[in-house]
Image 1 (cartoon, rainbow, N blue to C red):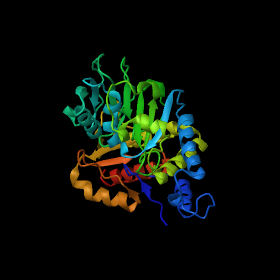
Image 2 (cartoon, helix red, strand yellow):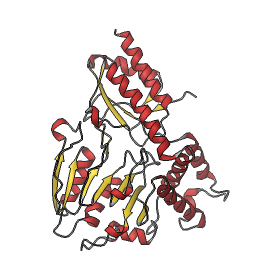
Image 3 (tube, rainbow, N blue to C red):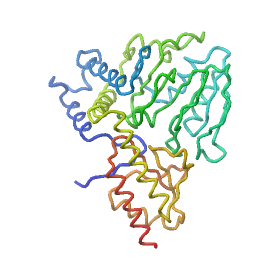
Length: 357
């Protein structure tokens, strides 16, 4: 069977060995002659999965003491609402940096709960850059950022210096590079980029930041509910958590976040160098803000689109069609995508340029 080079923006490529282990567990988990998805989530076998997944998060990201690790449901989109419920005071306010579609959605959810200050936005240039100079209001309850913007191909290279708590949606670049967790009161991330299949969301929460905003929080939206019940207040999404655990173990076995950060930089450099050198293409994101996860680019001459599409499809490349808000192409280079696949795309681009030289 021909190898497919999967650049899907999400759900996205996972390591082959993880997919193999996960498929076996669906049939016979831990030699129980039972499927992973038909055993009790409170059984010893699954509790061990949950505990190992949480321990791997702490180890890989060097999470300091005083933070809880949760695997919950609802995607980061539900997290948009959990953030103000848990961190915005009654009658309080929050500051948001608006860098794309998902940042905009997070902001809109917070507006239902109190005053929201959009302190910076890159909407004026179709979100093709990360705002740099802005004032963070000292009386806001928190600052919210979206560290990587999947659609527009931009990424925060530096976390803002802030006197107020920072909360970050890291759905599309979690585990792709080293971070200082102590800079944040909460990090949250959907699993379907660098962790596993869609269906679970990782929360890394500073315990001391909770229970202080004076709100009556619905039980399922209260992060303290889930901390007390160790992510087991209701039945957790067992399969996505298991696959996330396997993926995190794969990352650890190969050298951890420090290793994958170097690999991801190699992949990004390879593709961006070709985009910049190739006379037929141009990148859409501001060069200083280009994402190492999602490279967005377009053909300078759209009349060549059909021809180029046939070439990359013939090379078994999948998932590079750009989002409708940007057009052109988007190559998502998440952790499990090998450097080899990026080289195949670059070779196709080079060959295409030769045909038109």
